Image 1 (spheres, helix red, strand yellow):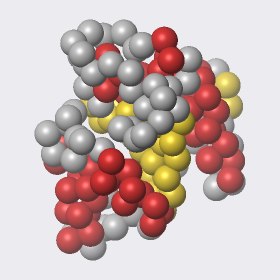
Image 2 (image 1 turned 45 degrees about the horizontal axis):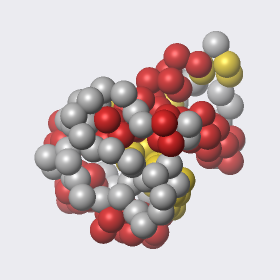
Image 3 (image 1 turned 120 degrees about the vertical axis):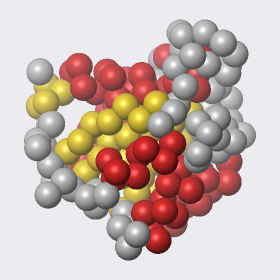
Image 4 (image 1 turned 90 degrees about the vertical axis):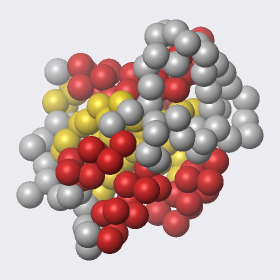
Amino acid sequence: MLQVTILGVGNILLQDEGFGVRVVEQLSERYVFPDSVQVLDGGTLGMELVSFLLETEKLILVDAILGSGLPGSFYCYRNGAVNTYMAEKASMHGVGMQEILKVLELMEKSIPEIVVMGVQPLSLEAGTELSVPVQIQVNRVMDEVVSCLKQWQIAVDLK
């Protein structure tokens, strides 16, 4: 039974909006995860993500987060505070994570533990490269993801 999903979302064609996807790409390249952990590039899938999250008990969501900080500022929300992320996220993914989580709740498949982490974008203009202040944070966010897994007693190894 799948327990943990690390989900990166965002549009890689809009520079920093693709931050979550870029983080999970790097995680997949650098680490070996146990079978109980699913690392998923959610891109801009929207409702299609529901089927990938049905067995998830713990979710780490990585995304560009429109907060009030400077570009590259790190944000992390857990459980109840995830609503803050939902309020701040002007979703460019079509269907937002709030709707996806609501559908899971209606299906009686709510995810008991959710952690959202990401950084303040600098640019959401057309382009495939992350801006410098956002790119600099990729390694930090990967470290935060691995740290979160360790808190859940899930070991990961470098490739």
